[in-house]
Length: 115
Image 1 (cartoon, rainbow, N blue to C red):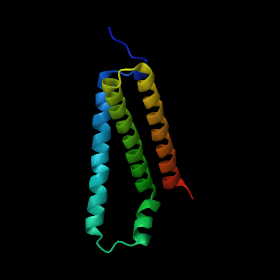
Image 2 (cartoon, rainbow, N blue to C red):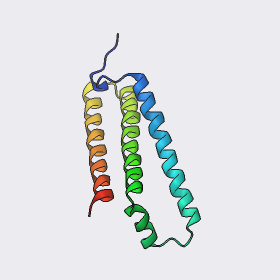
Image 3 (cartoon, helix red, strand yellow):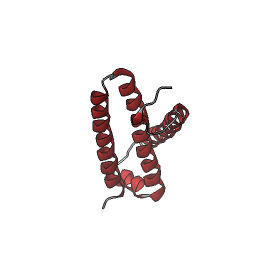
């Protein structure tokens, strides 16, 4: 049996499920934004700001942001484990990826919920 410590105990099924659920959430969010832009041709800052001031939109955006982070991590973890054969290089790349995803996630939360 082959084991990989960078898998963090996840199974292939959980990775598959994370990818599919996050993809559906991102598709719904993208569809909503595109339709909103199409149905509001004279969109100004006040209207756009008003949309994102609503709690449900902030929660939907946060869900999309978390979905991007999860989707990116599973995808990039798969790519690094498939193509980076040296353990040191692979773990180093994965640490950089984790840090970048974390920074973007915290930054996105700050933008969404900050003052």
